[in-house]
Image (cartoon, rainbow, N blue to C red; front, side):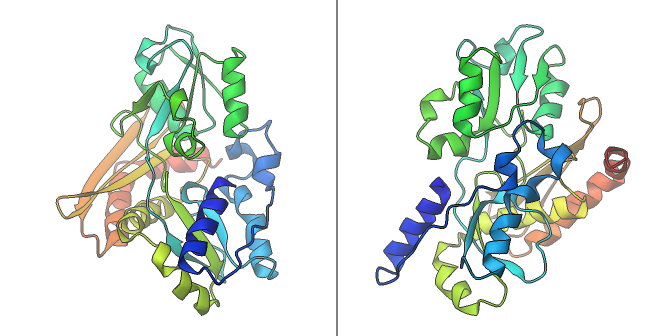
Length: 292
């Protein structure tokens, strides 16, 4: 809802003569909170109902966290804009400890993400990682009730909800490579709405869009989903793009990574290059094992 209101405010600034209404919806991904995403169908659960509203003409645009958007959009839909990225890093949240390194053996860490889980297990095998679902406030409440010694959340969500004071430390990309699209907002429309492409163009941030397109192409070529622990993070560096990616087993026992640099003009080519490198190192064996 914060994201929708943010885009609403931006559109009102751009087009003060236009009425911009919010159609609030609770998606299946929001309703099923007792099972991890990888067991109930993945990230598309946050998107499908919004796409139905677009298709039926009940809504003109849908605002998504880019990390929730499936790598291949259904036919007839398009991403009209990718907004400027908020902090893409993961945040360590705890009432009693300052960082993952400070947690004692057997301490319970909560996360809903296989990507975060496998990286924690790889670096801190003495910690216990348990599933954590619900909205940000629900997750913080579970931490405060003592169900977890610490939880890992996206820094972007905490910043947007003005909960920055809950962040004890930020995990560097070296320690916890972000999810594909993490921290970026995307605006989805019906592909036949040429009028909306034009009016949403000012909300597109070319630098963020190039980074996210590279990340998404890497993930698409790896058949990335909630079932696959993978991370992908591109950033502008020395006038070009630097993309890092990894694929791992959920227990963190096997983690393969790759990194390449490319042009901001051809982000998909860079994504394909990193994916090819990961596949050459055996990523397909890890992914196919997880699909069975």
